[in-house]
Length: 230
Image: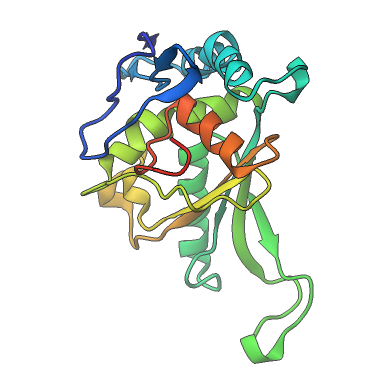
């Protein structure tokens, strides 16, 4: 079963990233990092509930004290996680179907196939051609994927030094790319014909980059050292 440890433990994986405490109040400095112990018997429901309960019980209160919110509805929260992938050769039917199956394994949800809305002669694209794959995760599936991403997938990246904290879009959303799908434990290296990356967008209700950064870091996202907001 998945268990949440106390939020005062700093490391959820071995790396050289140095974390600094988030100032929750003038008298208290608390590390708000999710440190989960994962086992093969962990189910999607238990993983998502653990992370959601941690957000509801501890992160919301810490955010309220940090930014002095007067209304509970002002506290930032996750709304959805979007994964996009564009195969290098969409015309290859076999490779495209394999990419769809891989995305379904990674997210646990059937992906949507995006098609061209109009023809573009210079790119040799005809209206209706398959261009990419998209998955939008919400509710329990969103928290389950984020739980696996933080505790299983990102630590598998070789020489991982943390995610860039400059990749926020200015409206509280965080976007980052992954070069290799082999970082996900659901992938079998023997069945993969070509390594391809994907784009991940984490959508929140935060209105500023600092609020979104604080929310994600409290949930356990391993960011690089940030002297500006820490």
